[in-house]
Image 1 (cartoon, one colour):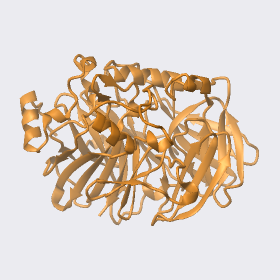
Image 2 (cartoon, one colour):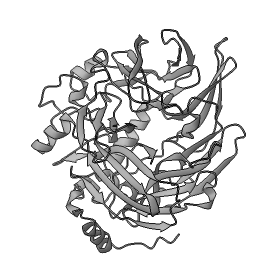
Image 3 (tube, one colour):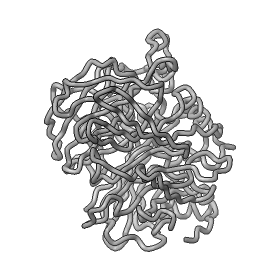
Image 4 (tube, helix red, strand yellow):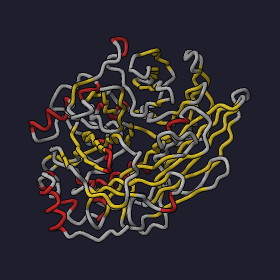
Length: 495
């Protein structure tokens, strides 16, 4: 697949042809005048929406890959002369890639119109505290949704699309237009309780999710249509940061890192992230909850570990097996993100794949670890909460000094066999999702779909691989006429 480099003038011409003003991008911040090329998407946008129709497609788009791919991530990272100090703080930018029959592809991106976004957009400056940036409150902070940025992930149920952020409520949007409808209230008993950014959707459409507040853990079970089937609140002394979890046939499992909150620092004006304390000498607590009766749960312990993302989990006899990615301790991670937000390359924080085996009868924990640099694990959606073999990740392959992942990897966690594809040093790869091929049954039969950023062209793209043949490279690629800020998570919905 040829990738002739476009000039700056060609790039701007493409923007105008797509109906997008180049001024929509926050290119002017002084800290980024000499930023590393791959860090340019961290500039963010200025709050205006994006739209591009009839995208240029290289290669032949698979005929069966028809539907919508929604993604979410921090899109606005500065106002005026003030930049956020942490990537997690940016206001949510919800993207929709529409994959129509005949390989016709279009793209739109809209900012989630949260209470916070609307107020700050009107004022032209930051008005409210952020997770990782100490902004003095210039508006009342009545509850978590006063500072909700809705910037992490998505969930579609019928005609209701949700923008998710782990610290507050889901925000509902129109999936056709991406117009914001407002805060979602699942039930009066759950009003104001956080709904995390990593709901697990089983093959029959059942949704499990959680939220944390004040050390309590709220659990949700929803039907495929969005009705609350069950909910509960457990007092488990949950840490102030709990991002993801895993679901097996019979259990929910959480790895609760040894993080505490210094409330004196918060009262003195520190950002929440700066007030978190990493207790390296303390264990990570492994919470296992019985799905049939969520009032029944067990706690185990393992050495201190910081985990953002899980692949999947399954029960086998009296054992619970969990695959996930373990990262560096929180202080090192946050220091690296702080450098990126200043336009400076950071040392690679190497996160690596793990499989944890929990003997539920004896409490013995056994860990298998790998050494490839990976993150954002995904599995075939047909095997969520079931026994699985295959996990896909962005990975770093033979990298130079550039920041970010530049390849994709498929791992067979039974045989340890892997397959990788490297883009070289001119692409930063984001999360890719596994999309089953219509009519197929075998695990992994389908496509791997996701975004990347081409450093030389200064443009973002969507590409598709045969999920069982990564080494062959992308089957096809759709180009945007602009760059989109790096995002976090997405989901594909067929049809």
